[in-house]
Image (tube, rainbow, N blue to C red; front, top):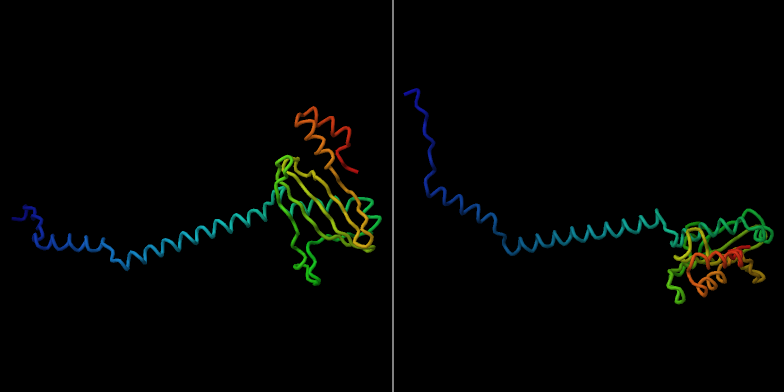
Length: 203
């Protein structure tokens, strides 16, 4: 009759068993498929590691710390250019650049020679750089070093050596102050006394 609800038909038991068997077969990987899946997983893990590594080095260059060679170079260059003795000897404008390979392309002069090490006396991390300085009246080598134990912007030393005469112009030299501070201890009062006596090591 029209009021009766048609009953749902159940698939034959044989068909249900075949469907379940097909599903189980689809979930089982052959040895070749397992190797391919493992290779794809390894490839993506390698890509991820490469991206993380590249990101670290890019961030380090774009956001340099006070210990990075380029950061030390930039701050030391600013001090050297502002030094009256350097200006008098080498003239103005003053140009600072990295390793000179004898070429005229600026890209060849961007590498800043540097050494990073741990100081054996106080255990601080150190970054030491060497770069070139050139002015209308001559050329020089510049040497600068920073310590992780010093506030940002301060140097262990900044020295300028005339390439012609070998004469050294001291822009900053805090080595004596650091040695004295290590001898009297790391107390705030001792540091203040030594900074007052030695004038911070700056000319």
